[in-house]
Image (cartoon, rainbow, N blue to C red; front, side, top):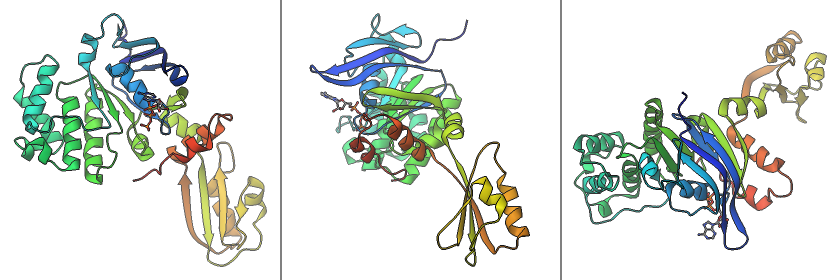
Length: 324
Ligand SMILES: Nc1ncnc2c1ncn2[C@@H]1O[C@H](COP(=O)(O)OP(=O)(O)OP(=O)(O)O)[C@@H](O)[C@H]1O
């Protein structure tokens, strides 16, 4: 028998008050061991979705299954397998780093496991801080501890809600390495991030949510292949007045100043190599050649733009840049 999904949502809906629908009929299935990135602009419903699974938000309707267990039937035990790195720092400032991790183990019904605490602290580069009082940690260290806290009870399903917001490049890299290790060991990771570079780097699959609706779920590589574009850019050392017939007919364009040829490569179209060969054969003054691939960021903006009137300009404007 095949194992159940790590997380399954069926028609998950959350309404605040009478009319504000934060989540609307969201259905989604996440495989054990996959890294799933949930993307969307501010207010899209990402945190509400995570909160509904972790018990921080009371859903209005729909079903949530964690490793096949219905949270309506047992809201407690399945959640022992879940870890959450929230957006906001939420630990007691008076305990030491190690104490707060032991408390967390106890909270999840586990015996004190010093080896595990050491392991998590080392993975997050906090090994020298085990006995530090948490309020004395720097902002970045607090964020590392937040991640350690979410992982110390060895959850099989981990939610990372904007885990690297406002952290330095080093922590981001450390975390990426650790997330990959966890996933390789079979942990399922659900990640929300505004740094699309992060999703592009880590995710196996991507879900796009806007205004509480799940617009798309697709394998990341498939999505990049389907909606991504590869462009060949040829810079000329002297202005060119017209392009030869082969590139022209294939769809290449020349900049107004005659210094740049742009050619969007498509599957089944004339290969970029043939375009270049023609340019060389015709003796055009090719200086440099580069290829550019569209990134997840470009694709996400297109998806949100592609939505009818509902994808408001405000929502698009709130998309932050790919890198901090
Ligand atoms: N407690 C609440 N009461 C009323 N409305 C809420 C509450 N919590 C969230 N909302 C609304 O629900 C919608 C979804 O919010 P949510 O925090 O899930 O979005 P998000 O995608 O996580 O956004 P961000 O990227 O800014 O964290 C928003 O319109 C928000 O204003």
